Length: 459
Ligand code: ADP
Image 1 (cartoon, helix red, strand yellow):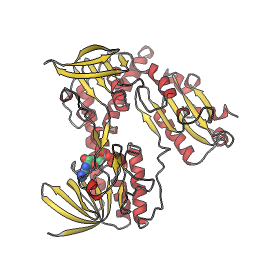
Image 2: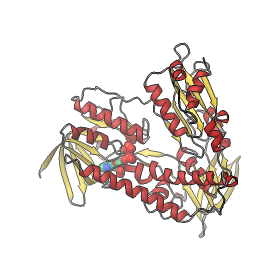
Image 3: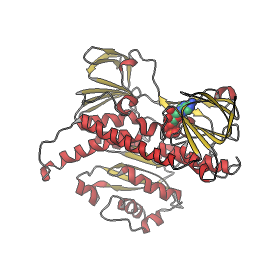
Image 4: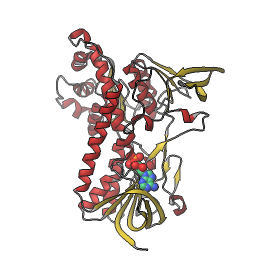
Protein backbone atom coordinates (compact mmCIF):
# COMPACT_ATOMS: atom_id res chain seq x y z
CA UNK A 1 0.00 0.00 0.00
CA UNK A 2 1.50 3.34 -1.02
CA UNK A 3 0.72 6.28 1.16
CA UNK A 4 0.69 9.63 -0.55
CA UNK A 5 1.73 12.78 1.30
CA UNK A 6 -0.22 16.03 1.18
CA UNK A 7 0.10 19.26 3.14
CA UNK A 8 -3.67 19.69 3.40
CA UNK A 9 -6.52 17.30 2.83
CA UNK A 10 -9.97 18.89 2.60
CA UNK A 11 -12.95 16.66 3.33
CA UNK A 12 -15.42 18.30 0.93
CA UNK A 13 -14.89 20.88 -1.80
CA UNK A 14 -17.50 23.48 -0.84
CA UNK A 15 -17.14 27.05 0.37
CA UNK A 16 -15.51 25.89 3.60
CA UNK A 17 -12.83 23.96 1.72
CA UNK A 18 -11.57 25.58 -1.44
CA UNK A 19 -10.62 29.08 -0.15
CA UNK A 20 -8.13 27.41 2.23
CA UNK A 21 -7.02 25.08 -0.55
CA UNK A 22 -6.19 27.98 -2.86
CA UNK A 23 -4.57 29.96 -0.04
CA UNK A 24 -2.23 27.07 0.75
CA UNK A 25 -1.49 26.36 -2.89
CA UNK A 26 -0.50 30.01 -3.30
CA UNK A 27 2.04 29.39 -0.52
CA UNK A 28 3.43 26.40 -2.43
CA UNK A 29 1.64 23.67 -0.45
CA UNK A 30 0.24 20.48 -1.92
CA UNK A 31 -3.52 20.13 -1.41
CA UNK A 32 -6.04 17.37 -1.97
CA UNK A 33 -9.78 18.02 -1.93
CA UNK A 34 -12.20 15.10 -1.81
CA UNK A 35 -15.89 15.47 -2.62
CA UNK A 36 -18.45 12.94 -3.90
CA UNK A 37 -19.75 15.59 -6.34
CA UNK A 38 -16.34 15.72 -8.04
CA UNK A 39 -16.70 19.47 -8.51
CA UNK A 40 -15.97 22.52 -6.41
CA UNK A 41 -18.54 24.62 -4.54
CA UNK A 42 -20.56 22.10 -2.53
CA UNK A 43 -24.24 22.41 -1.84
CA UNK A 44 -24.34 26.17 -2.34
CA UNK A 45 -24.17 25.81 -6.10
CA UNK A 46 -25.65 22.31 -6.31
CA UNK A 47 -28.92 22.90 -4.45
CA UNK A 48 -28.61 26.02 -2.30
CA UNK A 49 -27.85 29.70 -2.60
CA UNK A 50 -27.27 30.05 -6.31
CA UNK A 51 -30.09 27.98 -7.87
CA UNK A 52 -32.65 29.17 -5.31
CA UNK A 53 -31.74 32.78 -6.04
CA UNK A 54 -32.05 32.11 -9.77
CA UNK A 55 -35.68 31.18 -9.09
CA UNK A 56 -36.12 34.07 -6.67
CA UNK A 57 -34.90 36.78 -9.01
CA UNK A 58 -37.13 35.54 -11.82
CA UNK A 59 -40.11 35.60 -9.45
CA UNK A 60 -39.09 39.11 -8.35
CA UNK A 61 -38.99 40.29 -11.99
CA UNK A 62 -42.42 38.81 -12.50
CA UNK A 63 -43.72 40.76 -9.49
CA UNK A 64 -42.03 43.94 -10.74
CA UNK A 65 -43.41 43.51 -14.26
CA UNK A 66 -46.92 43.06 -12.87
CA UNK A 67 -46.54 46.19 -10.74
CA UNK A 68 -45.27 48.18 -13.73
CA UNK A 69 -47.98 47.03 -16.13
CA UNK A 70 -49.94 50.29 -15.69
CA UNK A 71 -46.81 52.27 -16.69
CA UNK A 72 -46.19 50.95 -20.15
CA UNK A 73 -45.05 47.40 -19.49
CA UNK A 74 -48.18 45.97 -21.06
CA UNK A 75 -48.53 42.62 -22.74
CA UNK A 76 -49.56 39.25 -21.60
CA UNK A 77 -47.35 38.20 -18.73
CA UNK A 78 -47.12 34.54 -17.96
CA UNK A 79 -44.69 32.20 -16.24
CA UNK A 80 -42.91 29.51 -18.28
CA UNK A 81 -41.63 27.36 -15.42
CA UNK A 82 -39.71 24.96 -17.68
CA UNK A 83 -37.80 27.93 -19.16
CA UNK A 84 -37.15 29.25 -15.66
CA UNK A 85 -35.65 25.90 -14.69
CA UNK A 86 -33.48 25.92 -17.84
CA UNK A 87 -32.23 29.36 -16.84
CA UNK A 88 -31.39 28.05 -13.36
CA UNK A 89 -29.63 24.99 -14.82
CA UNK A 90 -27.62 27.18 -17.20
CA UNK A 91 -26.36 29.34 -14.32
CA UNK A 92 -25.25 26.22 -12.45
CA UNK A 93 -23.48 24.86 -15.55
CA UNK A 94 -21.73 28.15 -16.16
CA UNK A 95 -20.47 28.37 -12.59
CA UNK A 96 -19.32 24.72 -12.60
CA UNK A 97 -17.31 25.47 -15.75
CA UNK A 98 -15.84 28.57 -14.11
CA UNK A 99 -14.78 26.60 -11.02
CA UNK A 100 -13.32 23.81 -13.17
CA UNK A 101 -11.17 26.39 -14.98
CA UNK A 102 -9.98 27.88 -11.67
CA UNK A 103 -9.02 24.42 -10.49
CA UNK A 104 -7.26 23.52 -13.73
CA UNK A 105 -5.14 26.66 -13.39
CA UNK A 106 -3.77 25.55 -9.99
CA UNK A 107 -1.42 22.55 -10.36
CA UNK A 108 -0.88 22.17 -6.61
CA UNK A 109 -4.54 21.32 -5.93
CA UNK A 110 -6.07 17.99 -6.88
CA UNK A 111 -9.78 17.22 -6.54
CA UNK A 112 -10.87 13.60 -6.29
CA UNK A 113 -14.47 12.53 -6.77
CA UNK A 114 -14.90 10.36 -3.73
CA UNK A 115 -15.61 10.10 -0.04
CA UNK A 116 -13.05 10.65 2.71
CA UNK A 117 -12.87 8.83 6.02
CA UNK A 118 -10.50 9.55 8.89
CA UNK A 119 -8.36 6.67 10.07
CA UNK A 120 -6.06 8.35 12.55
CA UNK A 121 -5.13 12.01 13.17
CA UNK A 122 -2.98 12.12 10.02
CA UNK A 123 -4.30 9.28 7.86
CA UNK A 124 -7.27 9.62 5.54
CA UNK A 125 -8.75 6.93 3.30
CA UNK A 126 -10.39 8.06 0.08
CA UNK A 127 -12.94 5.78 -1.57
CA UNK A 128 -13.52 6.55 -5.25
CA UNK A 129 -14.40 4.74 -8.47
CA UNK A 130 -10.68 3.98 -8.82
CA UNK A 131 -10.63 2.13 -5.47
CA UNK A 132 -9.35 3.13 -2.07
CA UNK A 133 -6.26 5.27 -1.58
CA UNK A 134 -4.50 6.23 1.62
CA UNK A 135 -3.13 9.69 2.30
CA UNK A 136 -0.89 11.07 5.01
CA UNK A 137 -2.10 14.62 5.58
CA UNK A 138 -0.05 17.16 7.54
CA UNK A 139 -3.29 19.07 8.06
CA UNK A 140 -6.94 18.15 7.65
CA UNK A 141 -9.82 20.52 7.01
CA UNK A 142 -13.19 18.93 7.71
CA UNK A 143 -15.58 20.82 5.45
CA UNK A 144 -18.23 18.17 4.87
CA UNK A 145 -21.11 20.61 5.20
CA UNK A 146 -24.71 19.78 5.97
CA UNK A 147 -27.60 17.87 4.50
CA UNK A 148 -31.39 18.13 4.51
CA UNK A 149 -32.83 16.81 7.76
CA UNK A 150 -35.65 14.31 7.18
CA UNK A 151 -37.76 13.88 10.34
CA UNK A 152 -39.46 10.57 11.15
CA UNK A 153 -42.72 11.74 9.56
CA UNK A 154 -45.02 9.10 8.04
CA UNK A 155 -45.07 9.75 4.30
CA UNK A 156 -41.90 11.86 4.29
CA UNK A 157 -40.94 9.96 1.14
CA UNK A 158 -43.81 11.70 -0.73
CA UNK A 159 -42.30 15.11 -0.02
CA UNK A 160 -39.83 17.12 -2.03
CA UNK A 161 -36.82 18.71 -0.36
CA UNK A 162 -34.75 21.74 -1.38
CA UNK A 163 -32.45 19.19 -3.03
CA UNK A 164 -35.25 18.02 -5.37
CA UNK A 165 -36.26 21.58 -6.25
CA UNK A 166 -32.91 23.20 -6.88
CA UNK A 167 -30.43 20.50 -7.98
CA UNK A 168 -29.33 20.55 -11.63
CA UNK A 169 -32.08 19.26 -13.96
CA UNK A 170 -34.77 18.85 -11.29
CA UNK A 171 -37.79 16.70 -12.10
CA UNK A 172 -40.32 19.50 -11.49
CA UNK A 173 -40.79 21.20 -14.86
CA UNK A 174 -44.28 22.69 -14.38
CA UNK A 175 -45.49 25.18 -11.83
CA UNK A 176 -47.64 23.40 -9.24
CA UNK A 177 -51.09 24.93 -8.74
CA UNK A 178 -50.97 24.18 -5.03
CA UNK A 179 -47.91 23.69 -2.88
CA UNK A 180 -47.71 22.94 0.82
CA UNK A 181 -44.52 23.76 2.70
CA UNK A 182 -43.76 22.01 5.99
CA UNK A 183 -41.41 24.23 8.00
CA UNK A 184 -41.25 27.97 8.57
CA UNK A 185 -37.48 28.38 8.65
CA UNK A 186 -35.70 30.49 6.07
CA UNK A 187 -35.53 27.80 3.35
CA UNK A 188 -39.25 26.96 3.66
CA UNK A 189 -40.36 30.57 3.84
CA UNK A 190 -38.14 31.73 0.97
CA UNK A 191 -39.34 28.97 -1.32
CA UNK A 192 -42.98 29.55 -0.28
CA UNK A 193 -42.72 33.20 -1.35
CA UNK A 194 -41.05 32.37 -4.71
CA UNK A 195 -43.85 30.02 -5.68
CA UNK A 196 -46.57 32.34 -4.33
CA UNK A 197 -45.12 35.19 -6.40
CA UNK A 198 -45.11 32.97 -9.49
CA UNK A 199 -48.83 32.25 -8.99
CA UNK A 200 -48.94 29.03 -6.96
CA UNK A 201 -51.34 28.80 -4.02
CA UNK A 202 -49.06 28.09 -1.09
CA UNK A 203 -49.80 26.96 2.46
CA UNK A 204 -46.97 26.92 4.97
CA UNK A 205 -47.24 24.95 8.20
CA UNK A 206 -45.04 25.87 11.14
CA UNK A 207 -44.82 23.78 14.28
CA UNK A 208 -44.20 26.56 16.81
CA UNK A 209 -45.68 30.00 17.27
CA UNK A 210 -43.02 31.94 15.38
CA UNK A 211 -42.19 31.83 11.71
CA UNK A 212 -38.41 32.24 11.30
CA UNK A 213 -37.94 30.99 14.82
CA UNK A 214 -34.72 32.24 16.39
CA UNK A 215 -34.71 35.51 14.46
CA UNK A 216 -35.62 38.83 16.04
CA UNK A 217 -39.45 38.89 16.34
CA UNK A 218 -39.39 42.66 15.73
CA UNK A 219 -37.92 42.10 12.27
CA UNK A 220 -40.08 39.05 11.52
CA UNK A 221 -43.25 40.98 12.41
CA UNK A 222 -42.29 43.70 9.95
CA UNK A 223 -41.65 41.15 7.21
CA UNK A 224 -44.66 38.82 7.44
CA UNK A 225 -47.40 41.28 6.36
CA UNK A 226 -45.34 42.12 3.25
CA UNK A 227 -45.14 38.59 1.84
CA UNK A 228 -46.98 37.83 -1.43
CA UNK A 229 -50.70 37.24 -1.54
CA UNK A 230 -51.47 33.60 -2.20
CA UNK A 231 -49.29 32.53 0.72
CA UNK A 232 -51.10 31.31 3.80
CA UNK A 233 -49.07 30.89 6.99
CA UNK A 234 -50.38 28.61 9.73
CA UNK A 235 -48.52 28.36 13.05
CA UNK A 236 -48.77 26.00 16.04
CA UNK A 237 -49.66 23.02 13.87
CA UNK A 238 -48.39 19.48 14.18
CA UNK A 239 -48.09 17.62 10.88
CA UNK A 240 -49.30 14.03 11.30
CA UNK A 241 -48.63 12.43 7.94
CA UNK A 242 -48.34 12.89 4.20
CA UNK A 243 -50.27 10.61 1.84
CA UNK A 244 -49.94 9.90 -1.84
CA UNK A 245 -53.35 10.42 -3.46
CA UNK A 246 -52.21 9.23 -6.87
CA UNK A 247 -52.71 12.63 -8.50
CA UNK A 248 -51.04 14.58 -5.69
CA UNK A 249 -50.42 14.60 -1.96
CA UNK A 250 -52.63 14.98 1.08
CA UNK A 251 -51.14 16.49 4.22
CA UNK A 252 -52.83 15.81 7.53
CA UNK A 253 -52.13 17.98 10.56
CA UNK A 254 -53.40 18.84 14.04
CA UNK A 255 -54.43 22.43 14.67
CA UNK A 256 -56.19 23.58 17.86
CA UNK A 257 -56.66 19.92 18.75
CA UNK A 258 -58.54 19.21 15.50
CA UNK A 259 -57.37 17.17 12.56
CA UNK A 260 -57.19 19.12 9.30
CA UNK A 261 -56.01 18.16 5.85
CA UNK A 262 -55.26 19.64 2.49
CA UNK A 263 -54.72 18.14 -0.94
CA UNK A 264 -51.97 19.73 -3.00
CA UNK A 265 -49.85 19.01 -6.05
CA UNK A 266 -46.57 18.93 -4.15
CA UNK A 267 -45.21 19.12 -0.62
CA UNK A 268 -41.89 20.67 0.33
CA UNK A 269 -40.34 19.35 3.52
CA UNK A 270 -38.05 22.02 4.96
CA UNK A 271 -37.54 21.40 8.66
CA UNK A 272 -33.84 22.05 8.85
CA UNK A 273 -30.41 20.77 7.91
CA UNK A 274 -28.00 18.61 9.87
CA UNK A 275 -24.21 18.48 9.86
CA UNK A 276 -22.50 15.72 7.86
CA UNK A 277 -19.80 14.23 10.07
CA UNK A 278 -17.23 12.20 8.12
CA UNK A 279 -16.71 8.59 9.07
CA UNK A 280 -13.93 8.16 11.60
CA UNK A 281 -14.24 11.59 13.21
CA UNK A 282 -16.11 10.27 16.21
CA UNK A 283 -13.67 7.41 16.76
CA UNK A 284 -10.82 9.92 16.73
CA UNK A 285 -12.52 11.74 19.59
CA UNK A 286 -13.40 14.89 17.66
CA UNK A 287 -16.15 16.51 19.72
CA UNK A 288 -19.52 17.21 18.10
CA UNK A 289 -23.18 17.61 19.00
CA UNK A 290 -26.34 18.01 16.88
CA UNK A 291 -25.14 21.47 15.74
CA UNK A 292 -21.90 20.01 14.43
CA UNK A 293 -18.21 19.67 15.19
CA UNK A 294 -17.16 21.87 18.09
CA UNK A 295 -14.63 24.53 17.25
CA UNK A 296 -13.71 27.97 18.55
CA UNK A 297 -12.84 31.05 16.47
CA UNK A 298 -9.51 29.52 15.33
CA UNK A 299 -11.54 26.67 13.70
CA UNK A 300 -9.30 24.04 15.33
CA UNK A 301 -10.74 20.84 16.76
CA UNK A 302 -9.10 19.22 19.76
CA UNK A 303 -6.30 18.30 17.34
CA UNK A 304 -4.47 21.55 16.50
CA UNK A 305 -3.84 20.37 12.90
CA UNK A 306 -7.45 19.25 12.26
CA UNK A 307 -9.83 22.07 11.42
CA UNK A 308 -13.62 22.11 10.91
CA UNK A 309 -15.10 24.98 8.91
CA UNK A 310 -18.50 25.82 7.44
CA UNK A 311 -21.85 24.11 7.93
CA UNK A 312 -20.20 21.10 9.58
CA UNK A 313 -19.46 23.14 12.71
CA UNK A 314 -22.97 24.63 12.75
CA UNK A 315 -21.74 28.02 13.99
CA UNK A 316 -23.01 30.15 11.09
CA UNK A 317 -24.28 27.84 8.34
CA UNK A 318 -24.02 30.30 5.47
CA UNK A 319 -21.75 30.13 2.42
CA UNK A 320 -19.99 33.44 3.00
CA UNK A 321 -19.34 32.51 6.64
CA UNK A 322 -17.85 29.22 5.41
CA UNK A 323 -15.55 31.07 3.03
CA UNK A 324 -14.24 33.34 5.78
CA UNK A 325 -13.81 30.37 8.15
CA UNK A 326 -11.93 28.48 5.46
CA UNK A 327 -9.50 31.38 5.07
CA UNK A 328 -9.06 31.58 8.85
CA UNK A 329 -8.21 27.86 8.89
CA UNK A 330 -5.80 28.39 5.99
CA UNK A 331 -4.05 31.26 7.73
CA UNK A 332 -3.72 29.28 10.96
CA UNK A 333 -2.27 26.30 9.10
CA UNK A 334 0.31 28.60 7.50
CA UNK A 335 1.09 29.97 10.97
CA UNK A 336 2.03 26.45 12.11
CA UNK A 337 -1.30 25.70 13.82
CA UNK A 338 -0.73 28.56 16.23
CA UNK A 339 -3.82 30.75 15.91
CA UNK A 340 -3.09 33.99 14.11
CA UNK A 341 -6.54 34.60 12.67
CA UNK A 342 -9.99 34.25 14.20
CA UNK A 343 -13.51 34.00 12.75
CA UNK A 344 -16.10 36.45 14.03
CA UNK A 345 -19.25 34.35 14.35
CA UNK A 346 -21.28 37.27 15.70
CA UNK A 347 -21.17 39.73 12.82
CA UNK A 348 -22.10 37.80 9.70
CA UNK A 349 -24.66 39.44 7.43
CA UNK A 350 -27.69 37.19 7.02
CA UNK A 351 -30.42 37.66 4.46
CA UNK A 352 -33.75 35.88 4.32
CA UNK A 353 -34.30 36.01 0.56
CA UNK A 354 -38.06 36.10 0.77
CA UNK A 355 -40.02 38.45 -1.50
CA UNK A 356 -39.39 41.03 -0.10
CA UNK A 357 -36.19 40.16 1.73
CA UNK A 358 -35.25 40.75 5.35
CA UNK A 359 -31.64 40.98 6.46
CA UNK A 360 -29.84 41.41 9.73
CA UNK A 361 -26.43 41.50 11.35
CA UNK A 362 -24.95 41.66 14.84
CA UNK A 363 -26.96 42.77 17.83
CA UNK A 364 -30.68 43.44 17.51
CA UNK A 365 -33.09 44.22 20.39
CA UNK A 366 -34.19 40.63 21.07
CA UNK A 367 -30.56 39.65 21.80
CA UNK A 368 -29.93 42.26 24.52
CA UNK A 369 -31.62 43.64 27.63
CA UNK A 370 -34.27 46.31 26.92
CA UNK A 371 -32.91 49.77 26.28
CA UNK A 372 -29.29 48.75 25.87
CA UNK A 373 -29.14 49.72 22.19
CA UNK A 374 -29.84 53.08 20.64
CA UNK A 375 -32.06 52.77 17.54
CA UNK A 376 -32.04 54.83 14.39
CA UNK A 377 -34.69 54.30 11.75
CA UNK A 378 -35.24 55.15 8.12
CA UNK A 379 -38.54 54.21 6.47
CA UNK A 380 -38.46 53.22 2.80
CA UNK A 381 -41.69 55.18 2.32
CA UNK A 382 -39.49 58.33 2.30
CA UNK A 383 -36.80 56.83 0.04
CA UNK A 384 -36.50 58.09 -3.53
CA UNK A 385 -35.49 54.74 -5.02
CA UNK A 386 -38.29 52.96 -3.15
CA UNK A 387 -40.70 55.50 -4.57
CA UNK A 388 -39.31 55.03 -8.08
CA UNK A 389 -39.78 51.26 -7.70
CA UNK A 390 -43.15 51.68 -5.99
CA UNK A 391 -41.97 49.55 -3.11
CA UNK A 392 -42.53 51.72 -0.10
CA UNK A 393 -42.75 48.99 2.51
CA UNK A 394 -40.03 48.22 5.01
CA UNK A 395 -37.22 50.07 6.70
CA UNK A 396 -33.58 50.29 7.66
CA UNK A 397 -33.02 50.09 11.40
CA UNK A 398 -29.59 50.55 12.90
CA UNK A 399 -28.57 49.69 16.45
CA UNK A 400 -25.83 51.59 18.23
CA UNK A 401 -24.02 51.29 21.52
CA UNK A 402 -25.20 54.22 23.67
CA UNK A 403 -22.38 56.63 24.48
CA UNK A 404 -19.77 55.59 21.93
CA UNK A 405 -22.45 55.43 19.18
CA UNK A 406 -20.55 52.50 17.74
CA UNK A 407 -22.70 50.53 15.31
CA UNK A 408 -23.45 47.09 16.73
CA UNK A 409 -26.18 45.72 14.49
CA UNK A 410 -28.99 46.34 12.03
CA UNK A 411 -31.99 44.90 10.29
CA UNK A 412 -33.32 45.85 6.92
CA UNK A 413 -36.68 44.77 5.53
CA UNK A 414 -37.63 45.70 1.97
CA UNK A 415 -35.78 46.82 -1.14
CA UNK A 416 -32.13 45.94 -1.58
CA UNK A 417 -31.99 44.43 1.94
CA UNK A 418 -29.37 41.85 0.94
CA UNK A 419 -27.00 44.48 -0.48
CA UNK A 420 -27.56 47.08 2.22
CA UNK A 421 -26.82 44.69 5.07
CA UNK A 422 -23.39 44.10 3.53
CA UNK A 423 -22.68 47.82 3.65
CA UNK A 424 -23.67 47.91 7.32
CA UNK A 425 -21.46 44.84 7.84
CA UNK A 426 -18.47 46.72 6.46
CA UNK A 427 -19.22 49.59 8.86
CA UNK A 428 -19.40 47.17 11.80
CA UNK A 429 -16.17 45.43 10.76
CA UNK A 430 -14.49 48.83 10.56
CA UNK A 431 -15.69 49.80 14.05
CA UNK A 432 -17.59 52.80 12.68
CA UNK A 433 -19.88 55.06 14.69
CA UNK A 434 -23.08 56.96 13.94
CA UNK A 435 -20.87 60.05 13.44
CA UNK A 436 -18.88 58.26 10.70
CA UNK A 437 -22.02 57.02 8.95
CA UNK A 438 -23.72 60.41 9.19
CA UNK A 439 -20.67 62.15 7.65
CA UNK A 440 -20.59 59.83 4.64
CA UNK A 441 -22.37 61.21 1.58
CA UNK A 442 -24.01 58.02 0.34
CA UNK A 443 -25.28 58.01 -3.19
CA UNK A 444 -28.56 59.53 -4.31
CA UNK A 445 -31.01 58.19 -5.45
CA UNK A 446 -29.95 54.79 -4.12
CA UNK A 447 -31.38 53.02 -1.11
CA UNK A 448 -27.99 53.11 0.66
CA UNK A 449 -28.49 56.80 1.42
CA UNK A 450 -30.96 55.54 4.03
CA UNK A 451 -28.05 54.24 6.12
CA UNK A 452 -26.45 57.68 6.55
CA UNK A 453 -29.90 59.26 6.83
CA UNK A 454 -30.81 56.90 9.68
CA UNK A 455 -27.56 57.77 11.46
CA UNK A 456 -28.21 61.49 10.96
CA UNK A 457 -31.60 61.02 12.62
CA UNK A 458 -29.72 60.34 15.85
CA UNK A 459 -27.54 63.44 15.84
P1 ADP B 1 -19.81 24.25 3.26
O1 ADP B 1 -20.51 25.51 2.79
O2 ADP B 1 -19.67 24.19 4.73
O3 ADP B 1 -18.55 24.00 2.51
P2 ADP B 1 -21.38 22.35 1.63
O4 ADP B 1 -22.50 21.49 2.15
O5 ADP B 1 -21.69 23.37 0.59
O6 ADP B 1 -20.78 23.02 2.97
O7 ADP B 1 -20.21 21.45 1.05
C1 ADP B 1 -19.76 20.29 1.69
C2 ADP B 1 -19.38 19.24 0.66
O8 ADP B 1 -18.73 18.17 1.34
C3 ADP B 1 -20.55 18.63 -0.08
O9 ADP B 1 -20.34 18.72 -1.47
C4 ADP B 1 -20.57 17.17 0.41
O10 ADP B 1 -21.03 16.26 -0.58
C5 ADP B 1 -19.10 16.93 0.74
N1 ADP B 1 -18.86 15.79 1.68
C6 ADP B 1 -19.64 15.39 2.70
N2 ADP B 1 -19.09 14.31 3.34
C7 ADP B 1 -17.92 14.05 2.71
C8 ADP B 1 -16.88 13.08 2.90
N3 ADP B 1 -16.91 12.17 3.88
N4 ADP B 1 -15.84 13.08 2.03
C9 ADP B 1 -15.77 14.01 1.06
N5 ADP B 1 -16.71 14.96 0.84
C10 ADP B 1 -17.78 14.99 1.65
